[in-house]
Amino acid sequence: MPPVMRRPPTGARADLPRLPVMPSSVIRRFSYDEPQRRLRVTFTSGDVYVYAGVPPEVEAAFRAAFSKGRFFASEIRDRYPFERVLIATPPG
Image (cartoon, rainbow, N blue to C red; front, side, top):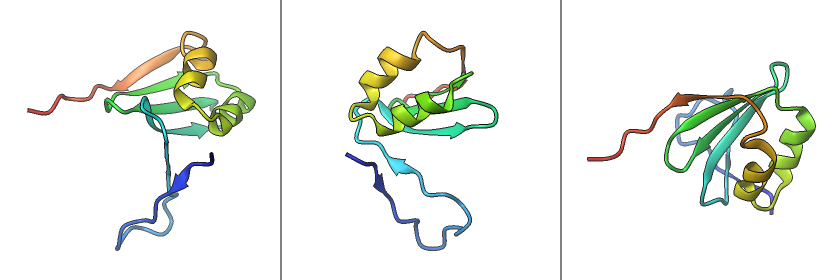
């Protein structure tokens, strides 16, 4: 199933890309910097990780995968070096 595109809120900048909404219980969203081969993944917890050296064909397969969480677990996690760039603060 292709990701659902959100309409930008009223007053949003038209030059900013719309991010797909992930139908996933694990991954909220992701973006890819092809020249740098960096995959930025935001998890539903709010934590954000950047994975280095991810080939474009892996990102394309991730984007096309029905289960983003399963694909991530089997094809990305533990296969590419990563950096946690944001730790979500628990509410309260």
